[in-house]
Length: 365
Image (cartoon, rainbow, N blue to C red; front, side, top):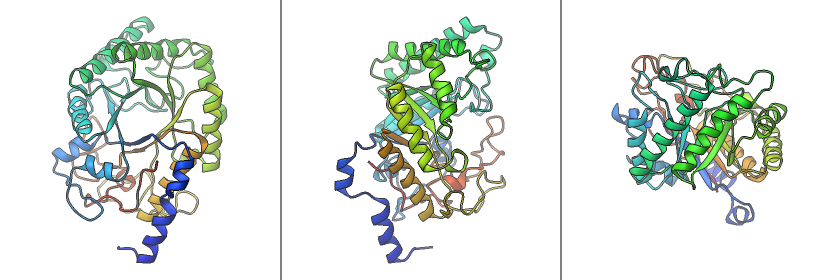
């Protein structure tokens, strides 16, 4: 439904900071979008449209909305054949061609790695810690140098994805607050990245933006064990990680405590409660946070609030997770059955079911 001119005018003022305000604040230099599923959507025939309904290149449509950084996850050997080395190299070329910087999100798995699971890739099964450290080094170096050779050197990488209690379980799982095995893996990834490109920034990413005590436990632990990293990365979803006030506290604290820039590596918010495929959506509530409705205006309002909060607390970047993952048939979440598994996230995308970008969403400086 087309909003009234009054609503549009209000949102234009409320959601986009004035030049004077933007000038006074340090600004978000990493304005990111994780578009890892975009390549398959395009191959399946999904079309994308700008705010005026004109068909265009989705990377360029995102750029006009303020995006300057693309995040791509990489899995070692996924059954789906997507987010593997070949596909990531191809997608990196498309992103760089559109002028975006590049963040590579190493899961070190053949499938999803997150706080609840960190599966060792099949090819590394049975390897001890020393061999896994070598595996991480060799794999990270290979991917980075392959990207470098084609002219798409990553500007940033994540050594692991949402590693709240470690990676490459069980070897890299943090037992009894012993961070030594995990740090061996993290430093292998760090060293490989710097051997490939000294300018590439290395992130350590957790989903701990809602829990300052857990963030201290983790980042204090890897610091004491000698971890090396350049940027502290956090996931923040208001429906799971609490208030924006708490987010500001955590960002400010970890920035000063560890002396490193902070990035929100993932965030998102629904624009509708409608479901456009056979799989029930993860987020169903009409007002998941702070009474903000699941509408296009509400999505824009929440995203703007997250960005403003992060910026004011001293963060340097915010990434929206999967803004282009529409409900097109065949682009499912399950790496074992991508054709039929469905998408539980399409109502969190910033492109609607027809492929048109939310006209109110902006990535803010």
